[in-house]
Amino acid sequence: MAYIREIFSSIQGEGPLVGYKQLFIRFCRCNLSCAYCDTDFDIDKSKNYSVSELLNIVEKYSDCHSISLTGGEPLLEYEFIKEFAKQSPLPLYLETNGTLVDELNQIINCVDYVASDIKLPSCTCKDTNWQIHDEFIKIASRKNAFAKAVFNECINDDEIEKMTSICSKHNVQLILQPMMIANKPSVSSDFMLATLNKCLKLYNNVRLIPQVHKFINVY
Ligand code: SF4
Image 1 (cartoon, rainbow, N blue to C red):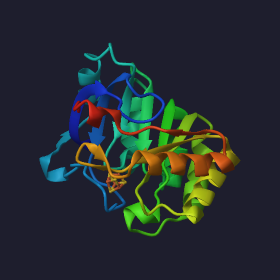
Image 2: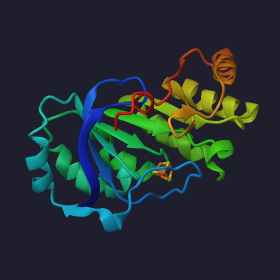
Image 3: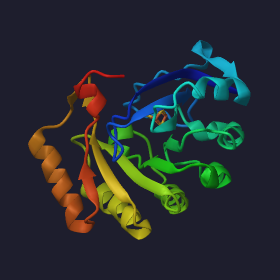
């Protein structure tokens, strides 16, 4: 059993799979508390599902490209995901904060895509354990994986050096995602491009992709 906050279909609004229709399964709870978090994963508003109950729902969404396992932090439910993956009719796309290394190791063979955050202290207002992100992305790179860094005007050269170094080391694409305030980027176009250019000087597999679903008001 696992507590799930919501199940809905929509387009993927972030990263390289932007625009694909996905079924989103939002798990409850998170092991982090980022300053910019706007996700409602409150366990009190959720329902407890068995794997078979979830499979019955999922089979109605055969027009989706894949299933986004999101949260909160879905890896907190890795045992449930492992069972679900055995019978999932669609590819699994794990959206994770990139910090639970042991849990990822348990299910890396069960998922098809890994979208892993790299948390920047300048944006989350918390410390970042870069070694953990490094270990996590190393495991994720065994699958179709990319790293995503949400940034604002406080991003600094040390963070740029560290995140490009991790992505380069494990040969995964880095997606720069400007922090949004309501439905608008929190930084100017010039700042976004300057940040992209700084990253590209250190690693050539970097893209700038804002949260597209917020521009078109689709959730
Ligand atoms: S990791 Fe994601 S869900 Fe968890 S607090 Fe940070 S932004 Fe919110």
